[in-house]
Length: 101
Image (cartoon, rainbow, N blue to C red; front, side, top):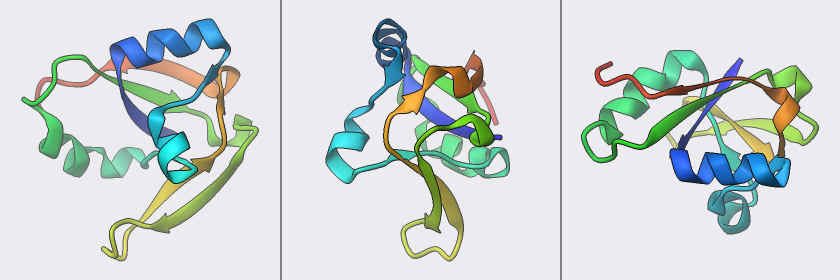
């Protein structure tokens, strides 16, 4: 299981398209994701900044595009990146971000 953090509006638009294509895909060539164990650290940095954050829970074995685990900002910690559009049938759950971590 991997997780992608996105805005509610962006996610709802993707449901109409059939594939999820965030701006990061155009900008960097991949969709940024993380393992559930990495969620607390990342969420601490964005809680309070936005109220429309959704967690997209993804079955990585169902993702059609290539997934690479890459060093996150030279931290030595590997984060999953999806190199292509996310097929929506790989998504197992969508939930709002927790108010606290």
